[in-house]
Amino acid sequence: MTSQVRRAAVSVASNIAEGAARRGTGEFLQFIGMARGSLAEAETQLLIASRLGYLDTTQTETVLTPADRISRILVSLAASLKRRKDS
Image (tube, rainbow, N blue to C red; front, side, top):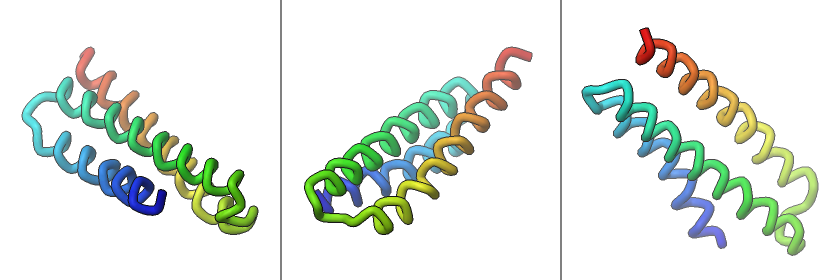
């Protein structure tokens, strides 16, 4: 499970970086979508770990609170890119 969470977390940053390096806004939006999916995967794995008793409530909140903030940032970035694309 630890390995899955690590891979998903690395995938978030990797997708953002790869998308930013692309030429078109549409491609960047696709990679932001993939980053959001990877973040959701990591969050799900952490919730499962918590429910299985591998993490206590404090540990879970310590990780999920910043993950929620990152999710909001990605949503805002996607909205901004979509506006730019549609202009």
